[in-house]
Length: 79
Image 1 (cartoon, rainbow, N blue to C red):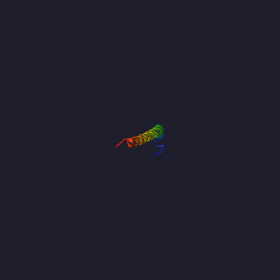
Image 2 (image 1 turned 135 degrees about the horizontal axis):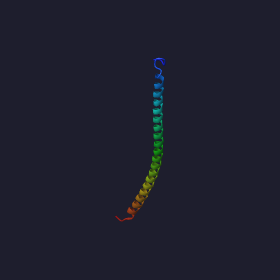
Image 3 (image 1 turned 90 degrees about the vertical axis):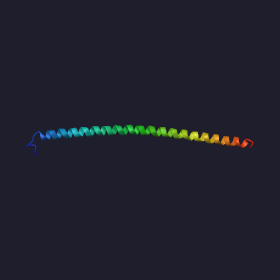
Image 4 (image 1 turned 120 degrees about the vertical axis):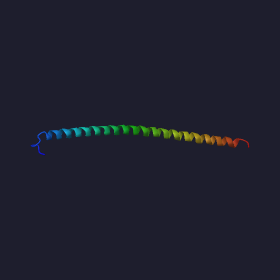
């Protein structure tokens, strides 16, 4: 097919190509937006994990201290 045989062929191809490029641009925008949201969610989850790990360590320390006090108290009880 030549442009001479089909003068409007080039116009249709250009329009189809522009539509494809526009669709691809929209998909790239959506993927980029999704990546940004996932990065933000990931950052929030990492912060939450750090907070929970810190709380867990504090609770483990309290349990260990309570265990020590209880063991000391049990030693003072007569048999």
